[in-house]
Length: 105
Picture 1 (tube, rainbow, N blue to C red):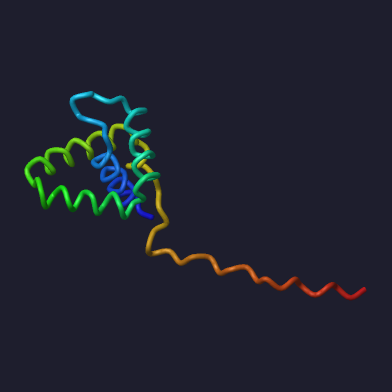
Picture 2: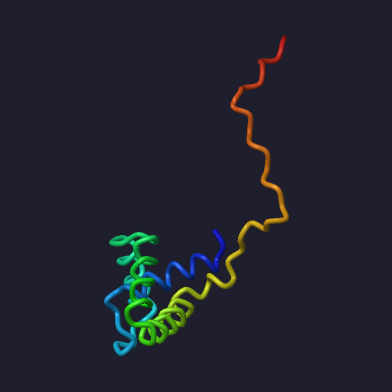
């Protein structure tokens, strides 16, 4: 999974959490809120809740998503440096499940 997708899922999870920007949460609190939301709603549930908020309160949702994205970026600084498998490389061939024949003596 690409780092940008992981960051997006985390931002959506923070978006639907009970954590508020006015609380000025620490990175540890942000990570805990992300884990809690993903545990409760899973990634697809978080995305659905974000979509619902954008439909019902578009102006407020934009501001909250900006905050969530920035907070996730601060709480998970390694994501930007995380290396993913490049699409241009081929995956190694799977190992054979058969055992090699025993050598003749």
